Length: 83
Image (cartoon, helix red, strand yellow):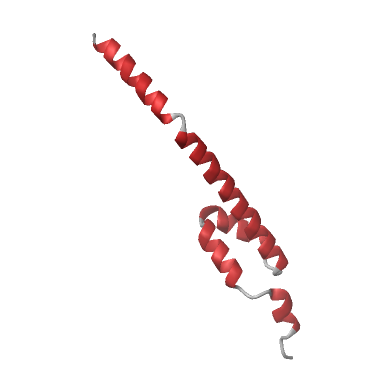
């Protein structure tokens, strides 16, 4: 009797977990990868170390994106440096 109840309970748990969480996880992963690609492109365009920014973005995606967007370009700031 207890085995039958446990078997039915596991069937219900497996059936309820497989749908939306898998799709949501996949969408979240794709968005995370797109943010990393965006960070790489912005850092490269601004003359920053792109791989370093991607590593930072790997752990802190949105923070790295905001910071790299706010930082000035090293290409233009070096050109206008007095001296």
